[in-house]
Structures are given as C-alpha cells and as structure tokens.
Length: 147
Image: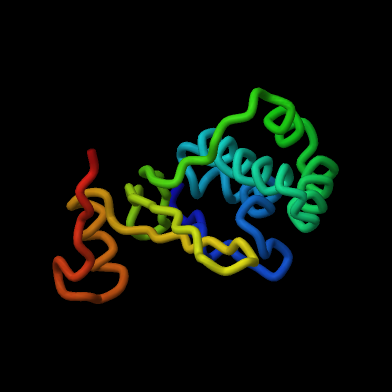
C-alpha cells in the first residue's frame, strides 16, 4: 500500500463531493481499509438528504447510480439505515500508514442544511503520526475519548 495517496490528496475538482470520491475514485478503496462501511455511511447520508427532497442530493444519487452502478444502487435499495454522527474511521496514509480517526458530524443551524465534519486522532499512534506529518510538537493534536 506504500505510495497510495491519502484521501485528501485525491480530492479534485472532478470529485467535489465525498460520496462521489468514495464511489467513483478507485483510490478510495486503498485510502479507506473499511471502504464498505464508509460506502454504507455515505449512502445513508445521501438517502436521508434525498428523502428531504434535496434536489442536489437526488441529482448526485442519479449520477452515482449511473457512474458507480450496482456498487451504489444495491446500497440505495437496501434497508435504510440512519447515518452515524460519530465514530471511528481507519484511513491509510502513504507516509504515516494506518490512522484511526474519530469523527463527529455537526449540523449547522443555517437553512441550507450544511454539516461540519470534524476529525481527531482516535488513539496515541494516530496522534503521534499526525504530529509527525504536520511538524507539530508531540501531543499538539490530542486523542479524543471514545466509549
């Protein structure tokens, strides 16, 4: 897996949304060791937004049905699940190796239904690796408590 791009390095103008990156960019499967869980999560979010009559979400779902095919459509047709608002994701970084990152999805109070997704290291190994990558002093990025 060495030399594989980090997820953020894969972000391009051609994939301006997280679901589009997850389902259409083959690097996503390398960048996320738990790709299936992430794909399920992104589908749940898109399903929820589509059910709220969000025209952009419906358009994106239609696009992904075409571009990603059965990988996406089978998830959309499956029993609906609620998207997780907190959890831990594993990311593969080409220099740091595997990172366990805790996330929390915060709903913003604006009428446009935007969300803020916050990631922090989930353990000491991820904290140390992120410190090395960013050139920060050890412990600058603190591990979050998980239950």
